[in-house]
Image (cartoon, rainbow, N blue to C red):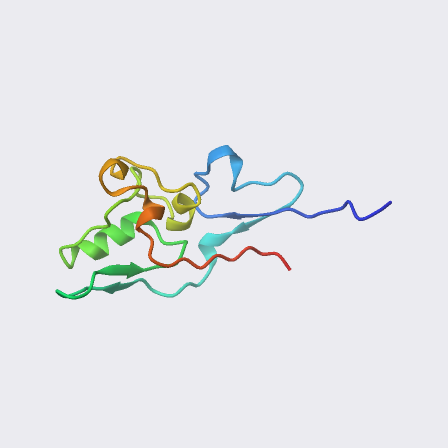
Length: 119
């Protein structure tokens, strides 16, 4: 028979995916909302450094906006619908209404850690 049996796994945040990315036929869908993730960290820069936010892929853009506004800051580029996860929008480059001025979200990422799930 050969080794033709593969199990597909999909990570699902809030499920607003394009082309069904957060689903899999005959496989396993992992609900990423239930993960215990580190808290959001906001780093406010001074004249010689820039400000940035350190978040997990499961963080909602609306939460990032609310937290950064406390410091008088906003993300340079975010999604047009704020109840989506950072990881979900970055997986599609994060093209939005602000992209014409600051580029897509992925162009504003300084560091990204990706977990592929391959063994």
